[in-house]
Structure formats: structure tokens, C-alpha cells
Image (cartoon, rainbow, N blue to C red; front, side, top):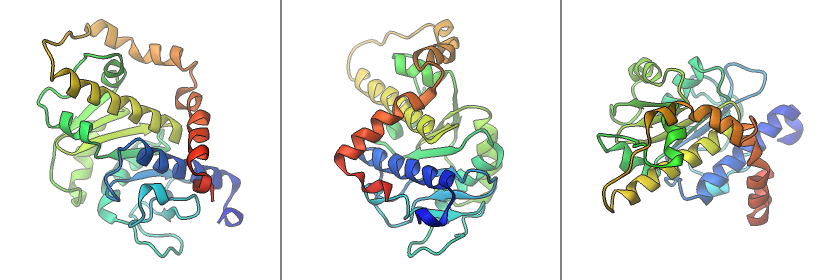
Length: 246
């Protein structure tokens, strides 16, 4: 595959395959039933997605499937694409051209908090980063209905974190690295919340601190976003199994 695509697409494939492996490594995957998509560089209507049937820790740069905005395959692959899984992603990619990557998981902690009426609570440092750019979308059943798309994107607006009620978590990123690090923070906030709720009375963070969280993120990451952590995450994967690069 490497010799059949542009260098830019190949790099996107490597990064997206790495993202799938990392989601598996961190324990957020739900067998084969969630998706991470990335826009093919230089295009508005071509995306890369997982081959439906492969576990996330099996995915490689070459095995990723190129699709259009309707989830149709644009190249041969022995694996199908789950069209239902692309309903959410296609809706977001169509309106959020600032996002290269859309990452969706059914992590246990994330689903648990998505079922709580109060949603994400301002009780941790991780939570303030999420709350500074968080939207919610009500559950409408398994994502099979095209008519849900306008409601989904209206709820999302310009936010980069989306809690799908009774369903899971979703993040957007200008890069694949940004989407992954956003999900790391999102899942951590949910994990901390579930554990904290098992104890005593919770201490909540003042709203004025949350309002300045985005600027704090830029300071902490030196305005590089997820790219600051990404090389280290790739080194982690390379120590485990570098086959995602093939």
C-alpha cells in the first residue's frame, strides 16, 4: 500500500493505525464495534476507517479502508465497512472541516458517566479541560438513522468533546494525535468521577477556573496539542509491536 498512495496519506495511515492500537492498549476498545476516522490529506470527501471485523490491536496502515462520505469503499479490501458506524462520523466530518480525526469509544467509565444525569462533573483537573469544550447528544438508539445527523451536529456545535448519552464518548482533533489525547483526558475524567463518587462528598471546581482551561491547555502543551505526547506514544507502540506501520 505504501507505494500506491501519497506520502501524506501514508503518514495518516500510520498515525491512524497507531491510534487504533493505542485505543486497544489503553483498554477502551469494544471488540470491533467502534470507529476512528481520519480525513485523507488534500481531500474533503475521502476518509480512512477500520476494516470491519479486525480487532483494534490487529490494524495496520495498509489494512485501513478508504471510503467516501456515504461509507462506500473506494478501493479493494477483503473486509467490509460497517455503514452504521459511519453515520456519526460522516455527519461530523461533513460540517467540521477543522477536524482531521473523529474518535469514538464505548469505554466502561465513559458509558457509566454518560448515563448519569449530571454528566461530567467539575471535580478534577482533567474534567475542566473537557468541560471547557463539551457537548451532549441524547440517545436515539443504535446509530442507523440518517435523520439523526442534523440533531447530532447541532448538539456538537464547535465543541471538541461529545458525550453520547447512554452510549459513549467522542472526541475531535485537528490531528489524530489531538483526538487521541483528548480522548485520554475524557476517559480519565470519567474514571476519576466514577471512583470519586464511591467515596464521600465531592469538592467541585469553581466555574471561573473552567472558563480559562483552554488557555491553560495551550500553556501546558506549548500550543502543540497532542503532538507533544504523540512521539512518545509511538515509541511505546514500537516497543510492544511495530507492525502497525506496515
